[in-house]
Length: 206
Image (tube, rainbow, N blue to C red; front, side):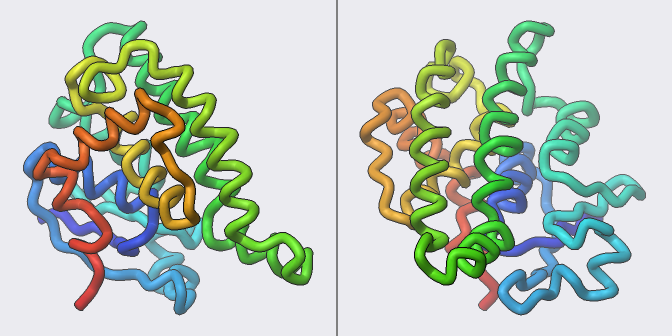
């Protein structure tokens, strides 16, 4: 049995949902509501000492950190990174540009802290728009080997990172058509059933 400790709007959890669905892996989702601080509960801290989501129970293991989870899935099931050291390095660079550069400075705790420190003079949305615009402009230039996906025509970890980031960018009013390659890739990815199934609207607790 595979269990995903999930928050429906978490971009990190969204990445893992994409990977699981792409690989055809069934799982049970356990909701951790970040808006209610459930990530800081004793039970969640026991499974994830950073007080984050996602965590994944699989193969008798408990895994944390979305990219570590996705790389584990690739190493044990295949299908999320391309063959060859150079190709894998390129996909990792794309993935890290989002998951390690953009996402951490635009997550819920950071946004709320900025808004609090500036007493509302610089809103969470202002903060996100600034860093999303800067980061996505660079990502567009990095898409040197894009086909229908970020890397050729193979869905990879980079696509699992990009789709959630665009979801977040559009929520704060960013028009991604400013970046034509990125916009084309995302539009195609969203048509893929496995990726559509991972969308937050499909994962929100009823």
